[in-house]
Length: 148
Image 1 (cartoon, one colour):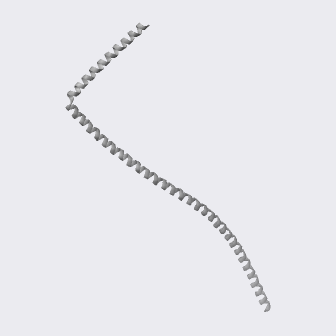
Image 2 (cartoon, helix red, strand yellow):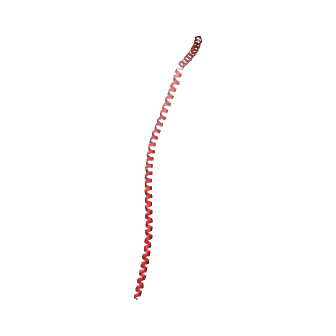
Image 3 (tube, one colour):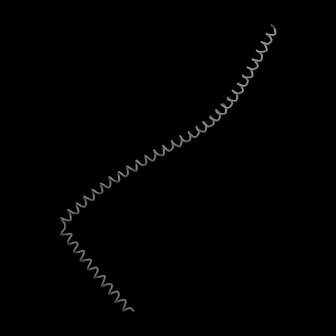
């Protein structure tokens, strides 16, 4: 019966050895898997750091762009206000021209006889001046011929 105990002890020892071998293989496999996980986590951390830097730069650029757009919008608002002022000024100027033309028409109706006389005198003065010019030219030519 002792030999049954020895055989039982031997079977238990072999079973324990097989169990230890399988546990060692499992632990080695687990270590390799954990090493791969650690490598992947390191890679992800580096990628996340890169993405964080790029995101921060993009956020700064976006903020600068938003500020630039706001400044240009304010500048454009002032331009629109100036254009509106110019439009109002042109409207006022147009109204002034209307008033002046109305006054001229009214004045011309009142003073049409005087205007007619002024036009006649202007025409007469122009004719006299042209005749004087022609005579002066003829005189200058005649004097120029005698001197030669």
